[in-house]
Image (cartoon, rainbow, N blue to C red):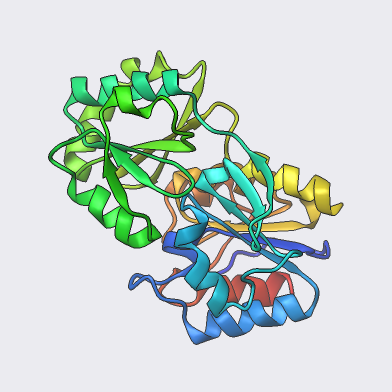
Length: 278
């Protein structure tokens, strides 16, 4: 259920996470959510999907929402590393360096974790035994997979990297944070799912990306609503004047948010937009 926080600021932009938020447990958009978002756009409210996915993994949803291939509609991809129009014009982009990649790949081997890195149009792995979750990610975001040794990666512009493994295996590795902490001068780590730990260039997060987009559009943080459920949504929930936690969100998100809506299997996004933006 929604909380009792009174919100009176006029909302001009709604930032929405995808997995666990916009889509239900079957990764589908419900008619109720589609109708509510369409009404918001008719009211001249910008609806911006904010996701760890590349734009290839968002196209289908953008088309369903009538937001695709437009010069005046926007999407935040790769956890905030890329801000672009839905027509493809890049507003900002922060890749990781080749040295960052080498350090991450070395750590993955040391910890015996599956690992891959992603450019704007492909997934690359140095694992001959390609992990289940790499294949899952490939299908989810509509990107092909290429095997490349670390030495073959020097000329590839990488946007982010991911440690991907079963939750029990990943959580055990993360219980000792020290080797990751040693890389935090140049990188930022966030969990976007129980089986994903993402690595982006330092300073990359959804909140900073929203700030950049808001500056371009002349929209202040108080005029932004952000809706999310996972750790990588914390920055935008904090940045937005109206932070909304999904009913299925992790506790950190619920504590940070102004209000809590229904879960993603009960049209939580639609409920929040209807109450606080329309």
